[in-house]
Image (cartoon, rainbow, N blue to C red; front, side, top):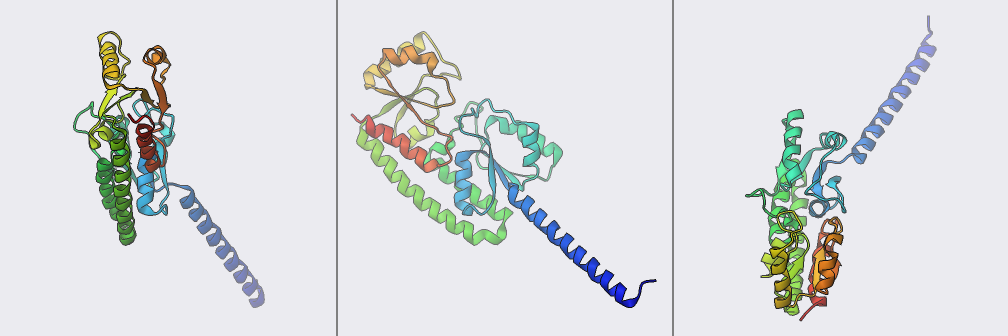
Length: 283
């Protein structure tokens, strides 16, 4: 039989053990929470907008990294598993997301999926993050989604949203000035990713790629004609698309090849770089 003094020692020892256990459990839980991601989205530019609204205080992650092709991306089982550990997924209706969301709902019908944008047509341009007008629309939906997820941070989100809108208005003025001062009305791209950008500033986008393929024959003859008529001297390409297949076309038309990474995290920097191309080749 244990004496009173020994019982006190044992009790104290057990208390210390329990305290240590709870401490390390708490640390492990916090570490796991810090290492995990609360919000997932498809691409880096959308994560950039989310981070601007949260002030970077909420962990976010993307599925598609710069250099990958959003049109052909397929989610892995491990990525799907990681998403289901998060609080929510923010979608912009990239084609792969439709199938992915179905898979998510089959595993957890209560999982939060917020649609920031919805394409009205299957062949609609998905590059909505390259238009200031579309960005404002998306940002408003991000704001509402974040407030629903974290209502206690509503004031912070609203403040950050107003700052973001002010930045976008200033950025729009810069882009508009650069485009208008260039006197360029038509420009050439390999992949038609600047449809909304062109619409914002009254530009005419001419794409080499047609319906997802590099054409030949009459289509390229028409493009050649447009290049000469509009005195186009450059072509905008993306690093994820192989332009080697049109190298002869580029050479024949004496075009400068300008590469723009439209999946870059810093969306503001991307838009400025696009506008600076027009400044460089001003007429």
